Image (cartoon, rainbow over all chains, first blue to last red):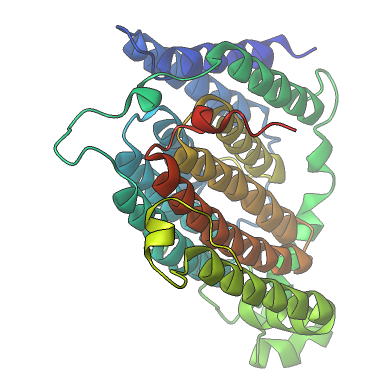
Length: 287
Length: 102
C-alpha cells in the first residue's frame, strides 16, 4: 500500500464531498482548501517520483503539464459543484481548452483542434442551447431546488475514492518500479522520429510555443535510413490519417453511419408532427 | 526540470473520470448528468492520446476520433430527449421520472 497517495486521494475525496452543493450552509471553502491541498500534494508526489533520467524532451517544459492538469481538474470540480447549469457549461469549456493544450503537449495537434471545434464549438453550444431552452422560472435568479442539493454525495465520493485509489495504487506500487516507466527513452525518440519532430526542438525554455512542433533539421543525429523522411517529414495529421483510413476504414464508415442515425433520430425526437399541439401538450410523438 | 511521463497523464485522466463519475451520481439535473459524462469522455480521450504518444502508435488518436463521434451523437440524441422530457413535466429533475423503473 502506498499510504501517501492513499492519504492524498482521501483528502481529495473529502474535499469534493464538502464542495458538493448542499441545501443548507456548507463547508465549501474548507472543501476547496482540502481538495487543493490534495491536488498539490499529488503533483508534488509526481514530481518527486519522476526518475532522474535525461530523455529527449519532446513534450515541452513540464510546467505546462501541471498548469493544464490543474485547470482541467479544477474545471471538472467546478462543473460538478456549480449549482447553475450555465456556469457549469462555461467551466466545461475551460476543461476543453485545457485538454486541447494537453493534446498539443502530446504532439496531437490535430486532435487539439478537433477538440476545440467539436467540443467547444458544437457540443457545448448544443448544451447551452438546451439549458436556455429548458430553464424554468424566467425571473428567478436562484438555481432550482434539485440543483442546490446533491443526492447521495457520500456514497458517490466513496465510490470515486475507491476507483481512483485503486488506479493510483496500481500505477505507483510502493517500493516497485513504476509500471509505465519501462524504456521510454527509446519510445520517445521513435515517436519523435515517427511524427517528424526531431530532437532538440525544445531545449529548456526555448521557443515561445512551448517547443512543441517546430521541425528543425538535425541530420547529424539522424540514422541514415531516415533521411528521406527528414526531407519530407510526415506530420502528426498524416500519420493519424493513414492509420484511420487503412486500419480502421470500416470503423470509420460505421462511425459515419452512427452519426447519420443519430441525426435522423434527433430530428424524429424533436419534430413537431401533424399538429404542433401534440408536442406542446407533452405527448410523445407517435408514428 | 524533470520529465513528464506517461503515468502523469494517466493520473490526470483517472481523476477526471472519477470526478465525472461523482457528478453523474450526485447531480439530479438531467443536463448536468450528461455534462458529467462529457467530463468522463475527456478523461478517456486524454488517456488514449497519452498512450498513443508514449507507445508511438497512432491508433490511440484514431480512437479519439471515434470517441468524439460517439460524444456528438450522444449529445444530439440525449439533449433532444431532455427537451422532450422537459416539455412533458416542466422540470429537469431526474427524480421526477423515478417511476420509470425496470
